[in-house]
Length: 360
Image (cartoon, rainbow, N blue to C red; front, side, top):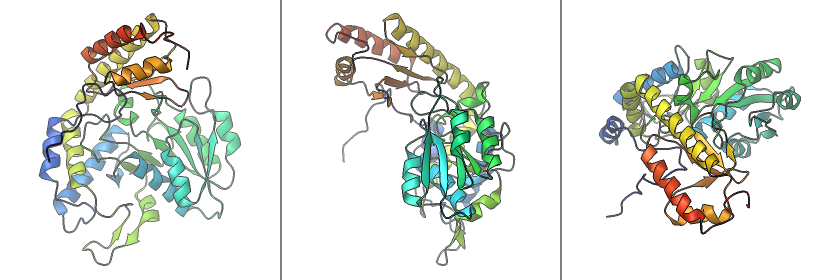
């Protein structure tokens, strides 16, 4: 096979990035290992324990428990599954804002729980009053998002955690993308800030690990018992994971990336990404586009359908928000030079795609 993967040089929509060189090398060394059978593969099992400990440092959780999952979708599904299995209600529901990831729709469908979507407020964060009105005695899980996929917003995590406690529901934070950005901000989002029970955080996004390397963390190890099934034909006796065979490459690369980059490398990375997002937002606003002010390093702006398609035809990998804005994620591979080239193309193409803003 001679096919080559796409270059990241014009990828502006992805929440994944090129792995750190140390993560790439570690992934290759552990390609043939399976942390799903820890008794057979003890080295990768030990590395997974190290990965969870490091993720605990990132998220303010001492003595962290959890496992390295395939990604945020699996971790979110498992959080819903823990909450459902822990409850005694026959009509469980999960409350999440409209800004929540679509994986919660998958979880509700697969697990047979009701998904209650509540609106966001003017700041594109979960409306606390709406969440309070949506929960009831059958609510098994309240979800807060720390770094929304579309706009990079952070829900009011402490307030949502308090609401979950009032109905004896678990509280889950989806920090799949934001988890490696938020430690360097003033946001309150993790286990030390609020009564968080479970959390999703993905090393293969801003953590610069190789795919697949997601993360599910739990405050209390006993919560994983809600997931455990017997595994009589393996050397180990039970599994709490959703998949059986898992990627040792993802586990090893997560450890390698975090050892190289936490905390100083991630701190510098965040500030570069933040500066790039602010530069791009200013450049788009100067050209008359309606721009959503970035909080975390994601930029959304209203551009015409014609200009959007022209940029895609020029090779830029772009996506849209649910409301139709162009969305750009300032990942580590997105440099200032990349954004300058993008804006130059935008200027060139805009003359052929008028009107350039607010027409679709």
